[in-house]
Image (cartoon, rainbow, N blue to C red; front, side, top):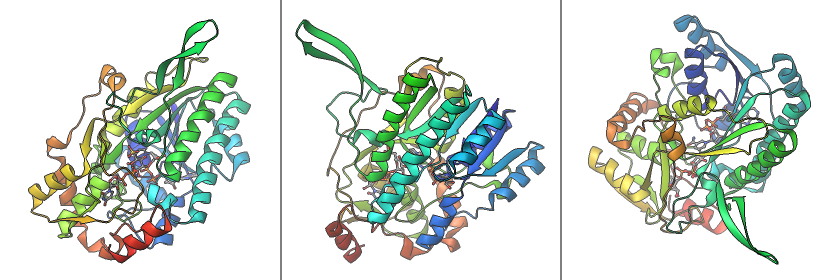
Length: 396
Ligand code: NAD
Ligand code: USQ
């Protein structure tokens, strides 16, 4: 297949591009390189030394003989270029990772909120409008998030996108399938909730074939392909805005920094290893919906864990201390989470879990690149309100 990987320079996109190229697909990375500019804005860098995207694809060619093309296009700002590219190249599948994906970054200030909504909602809508206009029959696979639901467990598993409800009508009760209600907890998560409505409309109105993958927190760094050459190494964010919780705990353990648990650490979240991310995308690509089908929604996660349990696990493994800090986010102090992921299991996913020795692999990567870590960038100080930000700044 000819596959466009939008956001293919990022943490999930790069290993996905390599995995699909390795399988013989004709892969095209589209990215505006905004994450590299955001690193510069925040004064942070990936723990791992990332080469330019042009250099990365050159090395991939050298190692495997396979070509990955790179096209610098901004989905949100260059609608005409995007439409032209799609009409000329007519990909068979499009994988959409190209959004601003950090909840803390999206809550940093009013300008960061505006940027995140403009970038994400406009980018997704531009893509859908261009797909409809050019009439290409590509399968769109979008990376959404478990966080659209807000993690409020009602004691029942979160289903895969849809809920059957009964509505009282004058002629009695009628059954209806609705999108599972969203309750996003950040401006970033809100943009993913809005994406869902855009997908529903374009699937119904234009017959676009769309799969939305509601992914949990991704951890780990290497995949089979990124390990093939040191210059193919994946991005690894550890800073207070883009670093995600388990990867942060692992680098903190590696450098002797007390593990930064927010509040009581009572948040339960869904997790998935990066190797399973790329595998799930492959599985979703192989199971495309027909034109006219409803948007297919998968929960892309392999296990749920409570944040303080993760901290205790990492502390036991490494001897690290745990610091319970004021929570800069507005979120429930404690929540349960049960998630249904039957669809991927039925397609053959064999989950990689935390138990499989891969935690040590991340600690080793962190030790190797310890000299690149700026300890001042570790505290999470972007607050959900001005008061929470001030408290986090005072007691990082
Ligand atoms: P990332 O920030 O590492 O990569 C995103 C890439 O998209 C970057 O290379 C960036 O330059 C590019 N991009 C952003 N806006 C763009 C635009 N307007 N035009 C073109 N390119 C643009 O993020 P990631 O961790 O790889 O996440 C990828 C996707 O997966 C995101 O949509 C995110 O919401 C989703 N996701 C990530 C995680 C996680 O834990 N990392 C978990 C669940 C879902
Ligand atoms: N947390 C800590 N200490 C830290 C960092 C985070 O206790 O040092 C806590 C947070 O308060 C939160 C939980 O850990 O309760 C998860 O935070 P996170 O930053 O790891 O994850 P989140 O903000 O939810 O966002 C990440 C990705 C996002 C993706 C989402 C999937 O950045 O792109 O959509 O995970 S999910 O969480 O399932 O919605």
